[in-house]
Length: 169
Image (cartoon, rainbow, N blue to C red; front, side):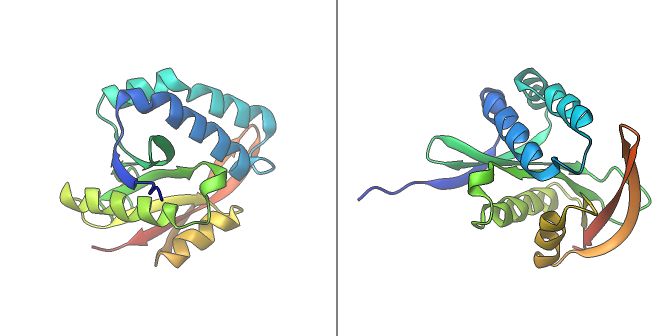
């Protein structure tokens, strides 16, 4: 009987191609029909392997979740960008390959990214999600997040509402 090692670790520049693949597949699954098609394609295409390699080389905080040698998902996190919110940390993105969603891996990435933020001295945490992305809203509510703010973002002439979830401590 073989066992598959499942772990999270800091992303390395050589993970860039797999992270880009995950970004592409997860964004298509999550945002098709929400973000207008041409704008979605532009956003996905901007975040290819070279973009990720550069971000990782500059020290972006990214964790990857691996199953054996394969990268199944990632979380990108750091200082909260919305200064009006009373949280120092932010998880910018958590994405998994669609075939690994709903299996508890997102919860593991969230928990480990949150620990990294705490260890870096950030108090509290915020995450933004599109208001029409019901799976994401349910995920953050199930993790104990409280809706703390609303905003909007425009994609190709279409304005979409987004919700910030917050966690203290």
